[in-house]
Image (cartoon, rainbow, N blue to C red; front, side, top):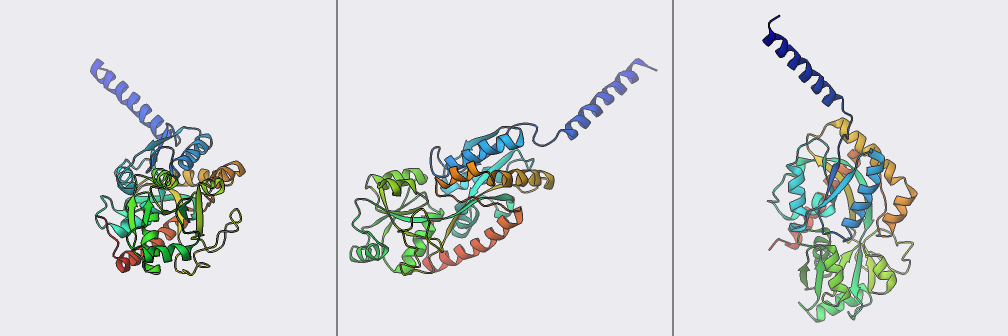
Length: 320
């Protein structure tokens, strides 16, 4: 056999062996990036890191957090939507990215269908909290104050197009008052401003700050009271039954990610949610772990997005 032919056959054999080995590599065979659409150290970032740490142990590969901040999470979402659908770039998504921003902004830089759900991480009601320096101690007093002082109440949020922003718009619409929306670059800066008295009120998940007395809880957006904050009424009990909203977190992947990869991730995510230690640590941030199949997250997003589309149309909320 000519030398050239032998070398060619040997090359083909080596290439075939390499490809077979690559195909046979189980997922994940290298670190997985979890993109968090919030600043480091904030109420979205820290739970995201808990997820990454827990999933690292369960997957047998490191899950590395990468913070991408800006535009209420849209920059992070757009980046993941355009990533290779191989399971190695995931988004730690929340209500704002999955349901609120698509309702509020017609041109968000990505198609919501560009993601496939992996599964829920948590589902939690928000708290309406006020600065300790603000005079109102209840929802009724807040509304009365805002009506007497139109345009003087600063309503903070973690950014335009976030869930706290549209929850504020829904509240303003239902209670008929005038206030100023002040968007910050994430939930942590907004909470810091509230504690410093630079902002008056905001919707968020903060529990520890309430218990420490740094801020004052006026109401909860859930359907029932929080056992850890039994004295805090719901918005329905405060006279606004339509004002219910849940802040969810979940993991999504770029559309086209293989179903078998989604299944592996979903199984491990549900394993993590069943961990008592993980549940306790998430609860410290006001987050209630929630598992389930990917379809549960997909159905929730569909219903919630329609809800916020209606709020945007009626309230006139828009991105400046």
